[in-house]
Image (tube, rainbow, N blue to C red; front, side, top):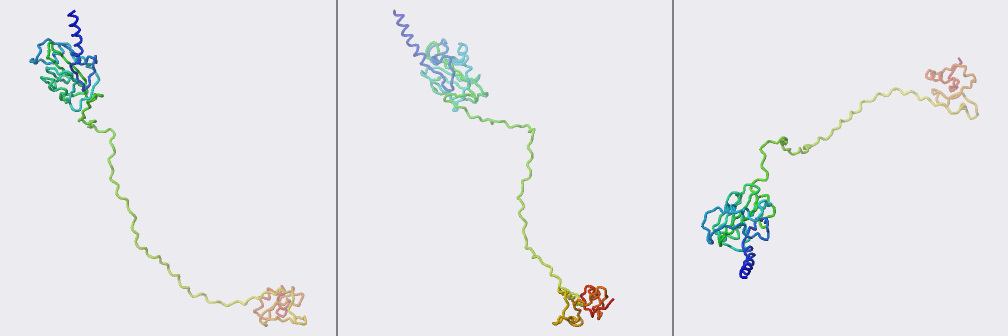
Length: 300
């Protein structure tokens, strides 16, 4: 009966022991057994009290089967904390040393880890690749056997959501400058275009001159004017006196041929001559037309 009562007391204390320890919170770890993430991953025989040894804690944990403890060593990469601090969720601060590793290089060590909780400064510049394994090993020596707490998280510049952490700004240029010449060199720039020429200045325009017209020269001297040929009378009857008898004389001056029809009905068979030489040519052309006075003509 006493043994059973002692067992119940011990069993009731187990959850408190499991919950009374700690684990890394930033960067984020992936636990294989989340309800027991704060439980020790290995037990090592040793006297209770301050640790006086000089063991490499990581090697000591590996030796006792606690490589990364209850965390997944192949978990996705998390971003490196911007402040360079590893943060812990610790519910009980036991005595004992701890180490922090980046791959195979120890980057932090504390003889009494409880004195630096809840954060430990880590030199993340030691991580030279896109994926480094961050490992924290804590040897709690407050009782016997000793308890080993062992967490791993993968960190790097290509990590995803890391909880409270953020990516550190990269100091390397995003794109390395190319030293090889381009296969298609761009054409050399031509000369810069100068200003466009403005309009030429317009000078004064000389007035257009008009050559003066030549003065009219002396005209031709008027020649002798031929006597105007009288138009034949529209009347077919010879001019007669009031008594109706023609007198055979022209109504004009004796020098001007008249237009009286000859009284001779046989005038077409006669040749007419003028009494004056000035009228001969005219009568020659007009006697046969009976337009010449009879006394200006003569028979043929």
